[in-house]
Length: 240
Image (tube, helix red, strand yellow):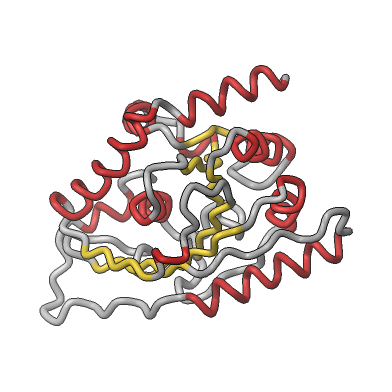
């Protein structure tokens, strides 16, 4: 893909300013009003106003994770995610929702940080946006929800090459969904990028440090309902 084509893809994913506002308001309205999610967000004071940065969320266990980050952060600068072309753009329903909200840039190979993803991510940051990533790489449905898995070195490369800081965001409660579920988000202070010219070992050490930070940030998993009722459990696989 040429630089011109990649820039066009990022412009489309970023969308118009009204789409950012609609996405931010709409996700909150649907999540709280229709699905009755109880969304608890801590640490918003750690979000630097107007700063272009990486937003690293985890653990990544469900489609809801990206929408939680969109709800937790301000509408501007626009938060854009690298999304699997094969997994997230594979039905008319998904394409219609993403066309309305924007905020998702399609990349190849399941969302892993390959060359397409790295170059697209750098384009998002160069344009002043915020790049949403799940540093474990892809969706880990079968992994336990209470810990962060190994973090890919590509996240460190993105931070180093862009010179942007990384905002760590830990998520709890989103693995299994039902109407009325409590979802928790905890935001930590931004992390400085690796020094310019860092080698592979230094980049991996930085990535391991990000994993440790996310594990320390993890909120406790919400308790199960006392009465055992979990209506609308199909929400777990709504975007599967």
